[in-house]
Length: 93
Image (cartoon, rainbow, N blue to C red; front, side, top):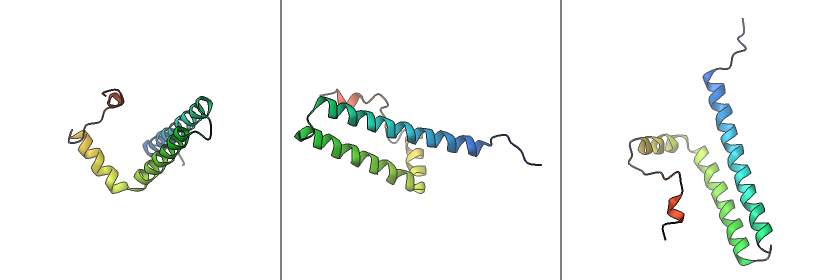
């Protein structure tokens, strides 16, 4: 018989897909705010959009690097790399 229950792998994949969708929506939201706040021809708009594209590409590169992600995760869990979830480093000037 086939089981219709979701497996742990299905739930893990669903969560990963939802995380990626959330990231993409956040990047789109930031893009929308920038375009509302600044002129499309503004230098800062161009810089912001370039950085959003670079961020997106880095996220995709990270996803494709399975072994690197495993090692990064291990370093974060072992507190060899500090992760600031609050992004306070933006405000520490």
